[in-house]
Length: 156
Image (cartoon, rainbow, N blue to C red; front, side, top):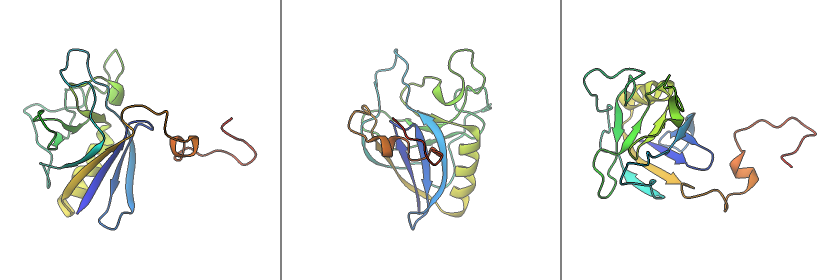
């Protein structure tokens, strides 16, 4: 079974194979709309509900609330329907992954397409959310681990 990992500090969503190897890393955010009852997702590991294919809504497309590939819901206490999806690709205010949701993690259509393709071969089991309540405790090395820094340059 494959798993997902969301890092709220680095704003990345990672798809991991059963052996823990990285199958893909994409931009993702948990920017929650101010009208939502949920302020942000708590760190933890949650069971995926849509294990073999994302849940689709009629008319899902790149500009819609859930994107072209649907939503992968997970069991989050007190908030049924919370999940990972894309959408709002060209919204005027914060398009794509940064566009606010009602509590979900928003990523890119490319990410959702690749995750959906992976789900057809190996079902998803869990999503682990980390560093989603601030970046103060994360080191610069962890925060920028996916950024190439040319030899002779530093983060400081």
